[in-house]
Length: 260
Figure 1: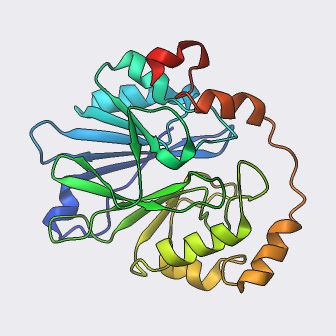
Figure 2: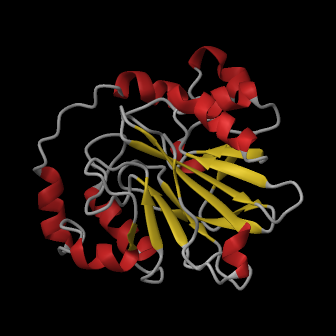
Figure 3: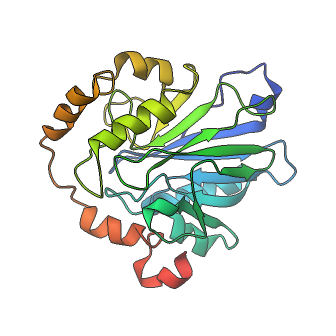
């Protein structure tokens, strides 16, 4: 079932432009995010981290809300589920897939740090946040008088609520992750809303200020953080051998030429 919310500044005209929905896939505990500029005539929209099993739900919601989906994008190459970007493209011609260039994956648009992804008069800023994987990025809503406030950061697996993504596969690095979070996420305004790609404890949103105070891993110094990450003793991800190869080609290996 979809959960929903709007940005919290109800008195702000710029916040009223943004339609925002937080969606959940329970098997992999993955959040998918739908954003749209509802004040633009076309109501352009984008999906962040869609899951293949939930594509019909996502497309149905887009149609019910009268939106025009223009982008299906990922924060990184996921290891715990297959992305829905390729499947969405087969069902909604004209939608473009997006992933980071550093991920070495296929997509219509390969983005790098500092780029802006526009949808109507709103945009997301791309911040490189490697460490969980080589190609992780965080998408941050725009900064300015015509952009929604408070800002929102879609952090993928780089920063979770009171946690972070593991760093023991896919080119992960605890040093890189620590640096990414502290330099690219913790430098945002403290009221910036944190929306991760997953949650396993029933949380849906945090803030930069909260995580700077209460994140049990990333409040430590780098050496202590590295020690924590090296001793997590996590099991091998059950979907990794299926998900990663598929996600390198928009989730549709057998249709890789068409999918991306």
